[in-house]
Length: 625
Image (tube, rainbow, N blue to C red; front, side):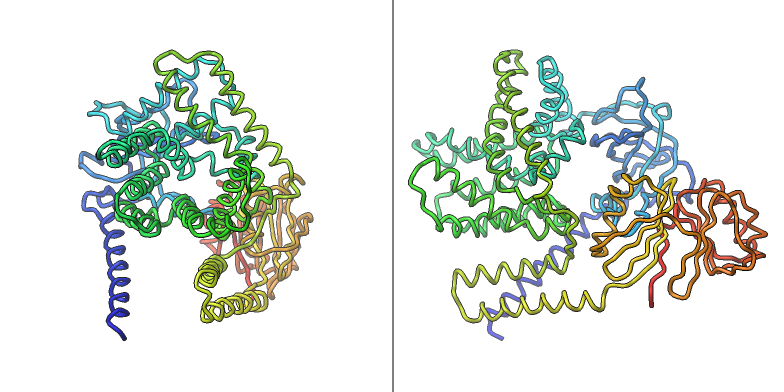
């Protein structure tokens, strides 16, 4: 092996070693002061002092917060928790930097109870959150407050901005969009508006990211271009731009996505305004290294992946696409540039978008061409609106005009979202598909740029490998199975045969057709056809007989099933049932009262009969060997 090759190998190994070291050093659970090192036995109450770090979107029943743990039972500790506080209209929600005391138990964060559901526990663990507290406001005791943190300062600034803006006549949806695009707060966006943005393929607009920061940087760079004519003007311009970008980040709440985007464009700003020529790929790679050294778990963040893939794709594919046509008129040049940028970004994020979101908006190009000009106006004028509102100098005509722009954007997105025929949903796309797609992309780029025979051979080999993978998966990987799903207050049994799923249930028709849990299962199992029917009393699968006993509590003593599924809280003498039928396993699904399930579990233990509770153990699956 040549010295150059050895150098490359050692570089790769060094990068991997540094990455592993960074992850280990940043893993808060490894810290000696982490609160998990001081927990007592399970179900023990602790006196916990904590500081509010972030305010999350509330759900129907709870206000939700991320907090920093300060003290557990008089011992100073570190770490983060998720805190759920039962909603109370008479109580004021907590503010960032508030320090509180509570006596309660640390609760684990539940795993998903059905296959292919979003794993909120894993998501939080990547943010170093391992436990949660469930409280009522009456259990909290406010304590003294230390000096405010940067998060507290930004939260107060945002509250002041929102208070000032509320004095003006913005509609509910307009105000929610302003909060999302300029303050990084999406809590007030209605489900209808959020769904419209998602179906139109422009959901990324609602989270401040590289697109927003890039637009702001482009406008500011043009505005401060005259500085380049003075001595050291480029350096001064770069400093001004970076300061303004971070000022916007503070106003936007310093969320993870905002910090990532501003850090990336700060490094890009320095590179662009530096006197020596630079390679944009090196600049982007350097920004990735800096971010991952500071926050290694960003690597697993969907926003981080989408942002960088979009930027790399734009840098790579946009110049190729732009050369396909040379429009003569300035208006056409502008829209052609916008078209090629949108197409290039979509190429880069398509595989990973299908993997995470399982849908493809066919009108993404139209929606982006119509929305991005709106977005530029809304961002720039939004900053002006906020500044004028803070000094109470915001004219009514500007409020009306700005609200009109936001409403028009919402109307356009709503119209695009209503074109259901162009939204392709429930697309199954595995991680292997993602990897093969990006390898093929890299090879195609290499073919176009270098036109080497070896690149063509490699691309054809990847295509054959992809076909082989799909063939293998179709004939050997798919497993037939019977699943007793967990669904609160309902019973669902699914029988998967090849690519078909037969669902037996007692859901309403609308809930059965539009159920996220079932949809996720269908996508994850690559289901092509679904048939719905009512529940049956007996099922036979894989040499097992399954008997359902519902609220009528009726069964035949002469029938000897392998498995019994108890549903709808039947008032049954389980001792007698076990003696009569002697089943291998008894299952309690989500339709039963918890008190019934607990009593049945005790009875099964007495007779040494296996018991399975879907509310605690998740869906039960019988698979073919």
